[in-house]
Structure formats: C-alpha cells, structure tokens
Image (tube, rainbow over all chains, first blue to last red; front, side, top):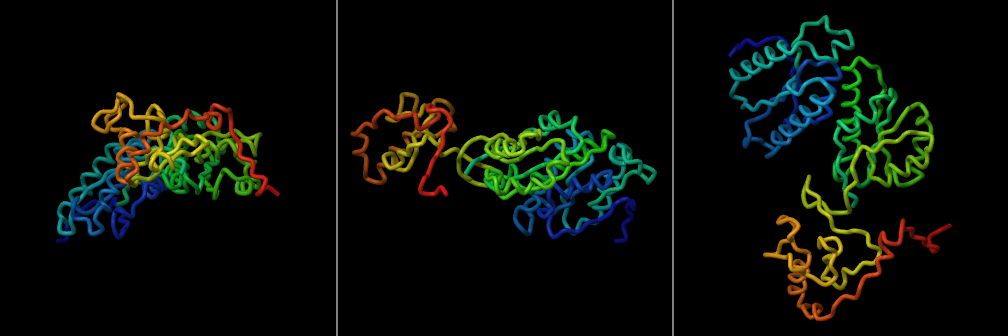
Length: 124
Length: 222
C-alpha cells in the first residue's frame, strides 16, 4: 500500500494488546514518550477472547493516573483496528501525532531538559 | 483472605509529596491476590510517583520492593539493610502489615497505600465479597455453612428479620438475606429442624468486644 505516515512513532510489537500492562505504558512516559497509543484488534475479534478489552481498561487506568500526576490523560489513547486497515492505521498515526503536537512536549521532557527533540514522539 | 483496595492516588500524593526518598513496599500475600498491593501495584505506584515528582521539577528517588509477607518479622527483616536510606515508606500491605512494619522500624514514617476492607472470597477477578468477621467462635456447623455474623446485616443469630424481602436484605437490594441463604441451604441438606432450636446468645468477648485479641498456642511456642 506504501501509505505515508509521520515518522514520529516507534512501534513496539506485542502478541496481543492484552500483554500490555499499566506499568509498560507508565515506563514509556518515564522514558520520555510524549504520547502512547495502544493499537489493538477490533472489539469482539480478539484471538485471545478478551485481550483488547483488558487493554482498554488498562489504558483508562493510565489516563486517570496521568491526569492525577500532572501529565494529562489525553497523552495516551487506545485504538481498535484490524490487520486489513492499513489506511486507518496511517490515519490514526497522523491523528495522534497532531494531537500530541498540539499538547506539546511531555512535562517529563520539559522537566528533564530533553525537550530539544521534536515533539510528538509516540510509541505504539 | 484479607481483601483490600488501593487508596486513591490523590491521597497517597498528599501524604508523600514532601518526601524525596520513598520506598514502596508491596506484600506478596493477600493483597497480591486481590490486586491491590502486590509487586505489580507497587511498580505502578512507584512509577506514578516518579512521574509526579519529575513533572513537578523535583528530584526524588522512588523505589519499589515486595516482601513475601509483611505480617512476619522474618520477612520484614529483609528491609533492614536499606530502609535507612529512605525518608518514608508506603506499605501496600493490609493494615496488619503496615502496622508491623511501622512497629519494627519505629523511626521510619510509614504510610498505608491500601484500604483494608474485610476477610472474603474472590467471586471472580475484581469482585470480592465478605464471608467472615473473625468473631472468635465459629458457628458455621449450626447454620449450614453460611455465617449469620458476616452475611446478615444485623448479625442476627435467629433470623430472618422483618426486613428480609424476596430473599434480599432491606439494607440494600443487592445484598442477599443471610438467613434466607441459611434457610435454603438447610432445606437442601434436609436439616430444617435446626430452625426449631434457637441459637443461644453469643459470647461476644471473643470478638472485638473483648478488646484487641491474641492467640497463645503453648503447643507451638518455642
């Protein structure tokens, strides 16, 4: 398809979004990610039955934590799409990138003085 | 097992915000089973606090560890080598663990990280319910294996009361009437005649009415 999307994301592959734990998302922020998006299968289509539903709840929990610690819950998001939706993947990367650009660098990077890098780095 | 739930992060932040070296001490016992205070929860809390301090431009050291059980001195002793380097400890153990840790390291400020709720069972993941109030004298043999002290809102020994309606308690329609449960169970067991023998008034001195309790087992003591 050779779809174009911003080079702002670092993709971390996992067997299922059910593998993604709260601590993984928090550590990404500790290490300077400006935003994190979790991209799982469509709801109801999980090969492991409920992996993406677990991920959805964990992402919500991380949103709450980020709100309370001063980073803002909008820096983390969950998307659901199938492996046949490459176009949509490129679209959500653009969407997330522009949202993070709007929010600016993570307060963690500002506080630690590593903000010189381009804003909008995300890990999926 | 003892059931607990995590304290709101806001409350923990309020307690620890003025400290710069913190240890988050989880417990591998009961609180791990109800996912309130095990290693995973300790890591999440430590990471959350690090994010909080970092974004506020404050340098702080927040480490996490877990002990096999915080209600035993032998395991608490594992903290003795490095606890001195911390200003305060947030213990994610139940109330027993928090107190025993504070008792053993009495110079150290210790905060609770969970709210200890009751002794209960895992109905399913994320759903825990009370089964025992540790009254000190078990009467389950007389009540079909269902405890009227823990399951009846009034702790009645000879129920049900007039507030039982359609098998539910008047306190809350989500609470099954303990005595309805006992009745149904005894009926299943063919032991309804037990309802003809009132249960004698209970000796509550074995419960909290006798003050803080202690078990002394001379056969076990060395």
